[in-house]
Length: 192
Image (cartoon, rainbow, N blue to C red; front, side, top):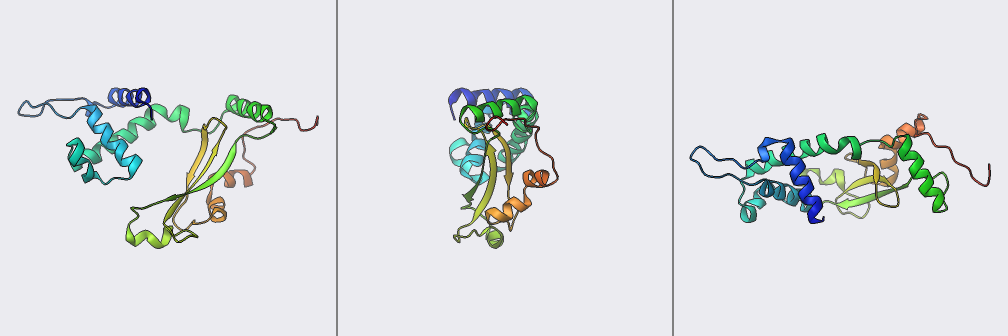
């Protein structure tokens, strides 16, 4: 992630939730910076670190890390959900269809794929539910993205959906398509 994007997220989260503002404690000592709290959150999300692992290099306690994670996620969803956590609207569909047509794929809204994401820190008690076909522990992510990686559909599989077919059967996208619910798309193939 670029520095400017990281700092944008820090500023947005800090403006959304006063928990991230640096304050003095009861004896007058300055508390943690927003950068410390949000760096701990990013390291947990990006690398799957446990909460106590942030104590060594960021000097932040476990309970503060957990609270930071909860509040960070809430602030990000509140701020960015309207733009990035939604189904495509009519303008988006028109843009996606134009892009598909320009690239030689008329009528295509994006590419669907399932990714098996290795879960190295999976709790032992859950291991059987997340064992994939190769024997490794995975969580399956189903995603639809356009050419510039705008992901307009993402679905993480439930326990037991360890292959692509089971994933598609549990997917909200395919359930909607089976019920005839889809973004409106008007396109022409071979002049028809």
